Image (cartoon, rainbow, N blue to C red):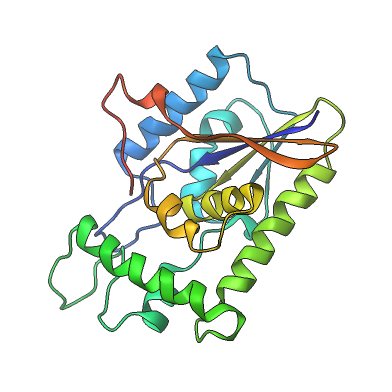
Length: 222
């Protein structure tokens, strides 16, 4: 049956002027991820990615060897600045805000979780540029189209982000939308989530695998 591996991008550049750049550790996570899948004998018939730099650069260990990746912005992460700006009462961003005090990743996560909860509650009528309903819809559509493009026994990889992976896990498990916040919070950079497609639809068979990152102390969440 067709299988899709959702590969979360490596660590980005929290607190820097441009978040959408892999950190040195993020590049190492991508390399370790590639080596781990190679060791397991996982070969991909198709590679797709969001259009964000951190997603595309996580695919470099594959593309540098000649593999081709198709960019599809439906695999992009939700815009945290958009969500926080619409649903939080304090300014917060994964990027450095000029003139604002530095914020730890943990402090940012607290604000983000509250904003995400409000974003989900607002549904399709929310004030964010992309509503929760629209985000969920475009990510599910991206997965459905990818699965439909695969033949029997073929395997694809999607280089994407924690929020995309979390919303697809929620959809596959038919969980309440609010479960997204908890799954989004625990996503590990460079982790693997696997889905398979069969007569009963698309099934989640693993979520957030990251044992390959533990020996080198490479487990990060943002």
